[in-house]
Image (tube, rainbow, N blue to C red; front, side):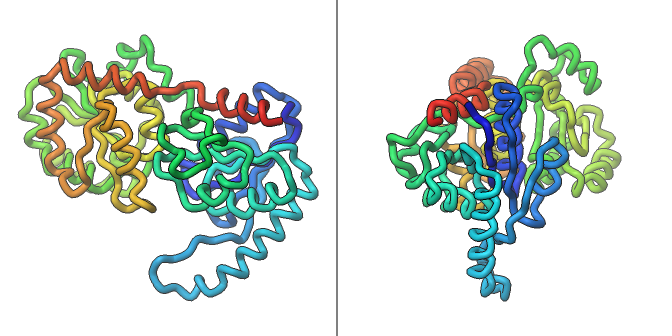
Length: 364
């Protein structure tokens, strides 16, 4: 029985949303469980977690700046302070399990928890493990992963393949196509490409759309749903206005991703761990354009994990302007689309949150 759980980590939505999904599943299965989050002061988890209804305490931990920065000199002091604060929190809260989801705060929290011999679990979202999780993996009770071949990072006997927790409402698309067509005001006779670069958008994907607006409009039986992100909202709107495009449906942010997935015949996306997990769960043919600006180039490794199983196509960020040549060619090849879809579905796991909580219960 899970009585008291600490969930630690954050920094990005890719860490925070799985953490909240795990917390929600714990509460569903153990309604009396007391859950506390530990994050990093000033990071987005300090807002997102309370908004989801959970209490969070921040540690003064920070990451190492790769370029010269005076703040790097006080990192050892921040680390010591974070370890001490994590120890006090754990001693006071007395959890019977501690779960780390990656991010700065998970390091000190799980380090102290393992020293105190409290059952600990790491949830690694990516196919290329982060350095903090690799270190912690040697000490924790279990490592929940989403990809095969993770024994190169973690002790084989500790690995449990659970998949990544994804938002259930985002991947429930069965029978929603007609609703999606109406919601986005699409032409039901045309094939639909969904272009999405995450909640903040992706510059190279946005530029690729803008540079190919004329080609998109001159291609028969094709239309676009395009999420550009807040930063690119004004230039994207201006580009649409100038081109007088009728086939591109622009959105700053798509709140109903379930309907976007339901409408899409093909998806063009970044290769963040959670985005990839959602795409596998819905089983959509996908062109992945990994961001080259992330630590350890882990998005490329996430994408390759699918490409190697014929479950997605990879286009490098530097070649993003050629995306639509690839996309239009793919839309004409129904056999290839079907192959990608079926192979993608095979990798989809929609009950990762249940599997992770089952792993916690087994350890307890």
